[in-house]
Image: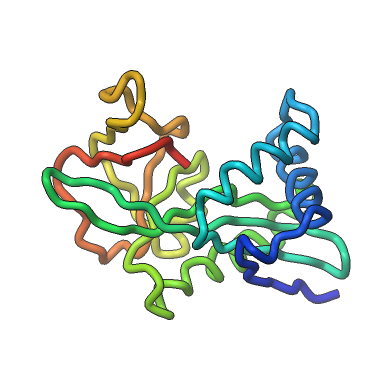
Amino acid sequence: MAIDIQRITVNDLDKPLILQILKLQNSVWPADKNIDHQYETYIHINTARPDLNALTAHEGTTLVGYAEAFSRVISYGEEQHQIGCLADVCVLPQRQGQGIGKAIVNAAFNLIETGEFQVFLFQTGVPEFYLKLGAVLIDHQFINTKAAQPEKNPWWDQHVMIYPASFNWFDGVVDLNGEAF
């Protein structure tokens, strides 16, 4: 059966699909919170992202992959720049290694081709996967001036990357202006 990749806006996400997304995420990153709490958190976070692109990969009625693409204004010195953010890329564990992750990430990266973003910024524990897709590791200091400890590195994964590798990334301290994603 073929994999169907769809781009869904935040306004078109319904509760059954969100529950499927949460179930998929829990299969990849087990959570201690109950599903009702996770649902409320998902709604809270993503309604604050009116430009959210939920990228879903379905095989029939089964959700086998998911990723999010949205914009964020970051600061570099006195300048502000709108960038694309890639987050929550996941594939059903028993379907990993079958090209689903590549297809869904490429669908997100294609938003650059349509002119919606110039660059994607993201963190990952599997940089080799993204290097094959044309991303590059960056080694910059990131801060979050909206946090209680603004100078603390806001990322939780070890590797921070951008796509495309050809983008002329900023040199110096970058303020995420919010929590990592």
